[in-house]
Each structure stands twice: as C-alpha cells, then as structure tokens.
Length: 403
Image (cartoon, rainbow, N blue to C red; front, side, top):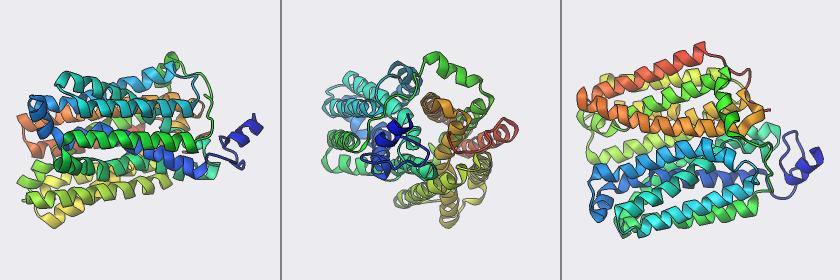
C-alpha cells in the first residue's frame, strides 16, 4: 500500500509524489472550488436582468440562489456515499462536467422552469465537488504541506467572493446575463481539463456509507465543529446579506463607495483564509475561538462605531479577515476529529455550511423586516458569540493535522 501511495502521489508520510499530483494538482482543485462557488453565487449580481428576462420578480429570481444552496446542502451528504466507490479524479471531473452543463442550460433558459432545472444541476455539482475537494489536500502533498494546501483549496472559495461574482456581474452588464452563465460554463470545462491533466488516480480510500455519515454526528468533536460552523455561518449571512443598507443608513456611504468597501472586505477575507490556515493546522480550537470573538465584536460594533466611511472600512476589513478563516479552520477541526473518514465528515461540513447560508439569509430577512438592519447586525454578533461558547465548552480535537 505504501508503494502504491508513493507512485500515485497520494501518500501522506513524505513520499516523493512522483508524476501527477503535488502543488499543481492542489492548484487545480482550488480552481475547481473557485468555479463551483462562482457558479453558486452568480445570480446575486444578475437578479434584475434575470427576473426581467424570465418574467419573474427579483424575489422569485433570488430563489435560483437559495435553491442551489439547498440542493448542495442535501447532495453533499447523500451523493458522496452513493458515489463512494468512484475514483476521486473521475468523480471530480464528472461533477465539473455536470456543472458546465448546468451553466450552459442556465445561459439558454427560455423560462424560469428551465432555469430551476439548471440551478439544481449546479447545486448537485457544487455540493459533491466541495465535499470531495475539502479533504483531498492530504492525498496530494506530503504531511508538512497539508495545512497550506488545504488553505489553497479553500482560497478558491474566498477568491470567488472577491473576483468571481463581480466579474460575472460585469460580464452580464456588457454582454447580457446569458453570457455570464456561458463564461462560467467555459470556466467549468477549463477546470475539468486541469483536474484530468494534473490529478493522479485517486481510488476511494474507504467505502463511504450514508449511515456512516450520519453516525459521525454522534462524534462529540465532530458535532462541536459542526455546531460552531452552523452558528458562525448563519450569523455571518444574517448580517452580511444586509450590509449594504447598514452602510447606506448608518455609515452614510455613497453607492459608488460601497463596491470599494466590499472589495476591501473580500481581499481581507482571502488574507484571513491563509492566516487562519496557518494557525488552525496546530491549534484548531484556539483559532476558531479567536475568529468567533473577532467576528462577534466586529459585526456587533458596526452599528455603534461605523458612523463614518473610514471606521466602516476598518470594521469591514477586520470582519473579512475573521470570516475568511472560518472555512479552513473548521475543516482542519473536522479532519482532525475524524481522520479516518475525511470525505464523510467533509460532506457533513458542506451540508451544514450551505444550509446555514440559506438559514442566515432567512432569519436576517425576517429580523430586518420586523426590527431593522441594526438589529440584524446584533443578531449576527450574538450568533457568533454563541459559536464562541460552543467552541469553548464542547469537545475539540487535540491537533489540526489530519491523520
């Protein structure tokens, strides 16, 4: 087995990683995560033209985002066990092909019904790719590189929020919303080719069964990690979904300046991904506790201290750094908590993460309509404090290196 791993480039104990694999393969997986998250979030900047073209309201058009997130949340823990015997290289390439098909169908969609089908396909591809990619770095690079490699894989998610969605919006303004979906379909095919060319054969390490996925929820360390990410992501999206009205009403930020501030937030998020990745590899609990505390403080203080553009900019940058580290830190926690079931625990992670996105947007909307946008910020900060409590009081893995 050790010889097979060394040849395939999948060992974790310092083999030579000959042939395909290594850092080029990690970069290809990062490109895949960038593509799936860009595909998921693409409708955010296209809601108005999309709704007009499909003859639905902007609220209905927004369901294209919610639906994809929910499908991804369900498909990750369900399909990963179902497809458990497939070579991971084959599985990733197949899901990228499905993603390309979904985006092409969206670009062609003559009506809302076809768009719904397209977005379901995108959700399936996104959920499975994210679940498999989340735990694959340990099979591509030697042990000392696993932490940085995992950070690089998750940087695709962070960069998508900075570049992917704005770029899609810009393409939509220049050439129409159909062109934006077509370009992302082409990007999916490029990612597919890169994965096929750079990944080594990656036979399934163990058969992932649905019952085994659910059983992991009974692992106290896994349950704590999932509880932390559920609260952090729900709180973040409850607040971040309404950050624009907060900036307009409290900070008196002009519409032209909002894009700049959100870019600052996004760039800070990419930085936070790598900073947290370096710490979470050895101290997953400590890293997550710091993230939760900073996130709670920043979001909660924005209505109180963000009354000027410079102050709002500083708070958004700190918010970005803290939230940017959530994904990679929780992933390090979960891989250390269940090193023998990396893909199963990653599928749970993806399911909880995407479910929390949908829940956060929902509770944030209810709070904003019923109480106001300031209260949404305090809700987000309160949920981050709850995550801090769960992380501090719950069971944690001893270290962040996956075994």
